[in-house]
Length: 235
Ligand SMILES: Nc1ncnc2c1ncn2[C@@H]1O[C@H](COP(=O)(O)OP(=O)(O)O)[C@@H](O)[C@H]1O
Ligand SMILES: [Mg+2]
Image (cartoon, rainbow, N blue to C red; front, side, top):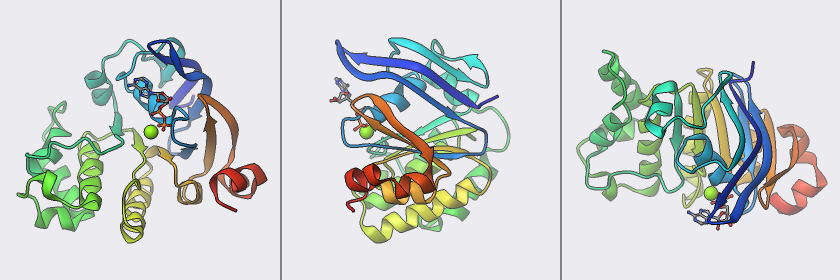
């Protein structure tokens, strides 16, 4: 059974069709890329699965169960975490407060240990634990957003444009951390306009154009695909 199985998903905003009948699946432990130009419908797809944007039609199965009517906070509890486009931090709250918010739905005793693990993964955040998140650099904010998502102990992690707006050196750093997270066996759907880096670290990829999936293949094959090269790799 796939961990996530999206079938014929349609999502509209006030009659504007943003997602037009897509099929997408993720097996446990896979890293899968979803690439496509600005406005293709990538973020809308993630938001629909997370219960943030209403689904018009189609099905979304998580561990075989239809999750369309489950509210976002319950989906977090079930194990679906989103690192949203633009990071979505509470700018006036400290780094540590933001990280702890990621664990708000948990009632177990492992939260303090997990916080230490996040600080081990992001030593920079330990140094800045008492600093207001809004005063961090873009890369540091991305670390907080990723750390906060991990604090929910997700089974399925959605990353929406983690490289957006970051300097090249910081992009490398963020992707190194994503690789480390992936090596723990985490299932990841990576949405990126930076197709090259996304495909280089995923096993499979989907290409989205105007609300539809136009290509789906092994990432290595997509990297060699002439259409993908021309449209997304600048080659
Ligand atoms: N909140 C919204 N209200 C109305 N239209 C939206 C909203 N969010 C996105 N859209 C539209 O839906 C389409 C897909 O957007 P989006 O999912 O953000 O694309 P991507 O993440 O691939 O850049 C675009 O045409 C965009 O303008
Ligand atoms: Mg987007």
